[in-house]
Length: 141
Image 1: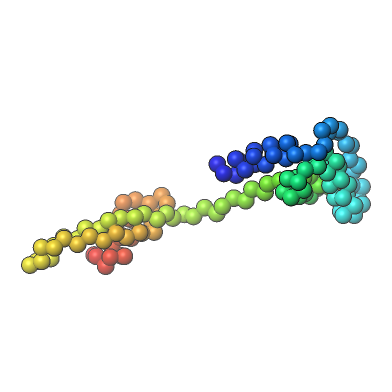
Image 2: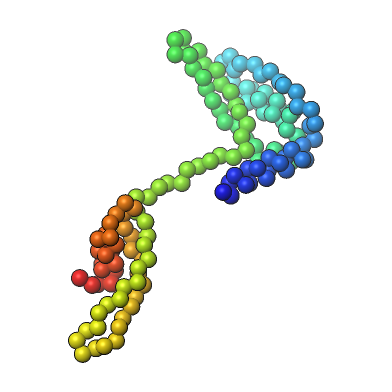
């Protein structure tokens, strides 16, 4: 899909224009109750030390994660870099169905009448839902 293509494209482009050729491992300190801004700046500096490209500068940000001990309640915050933030699209419980309605000729009138309508029906509906929706839009019984 488009998001996957863009992700791979930007990662490849970022690697090509990255001014850092050797990417050493950088050990980061625990947050130890320090202010978030200080810890975030440390994590960002480490990220920028490894990723020096215009792509990383334009398309990167940080997630804050907190690990909490169940027993003692000790917390440790980390700020992990990311380039893409996937957001799920809301699912609807309906769909739109386009139908062509052909009405029977009236007595004395032999013209056949057709009209196309788009009916909103339940996603897991039945043919009767489509017929009811089309009838409601065309005024047919």
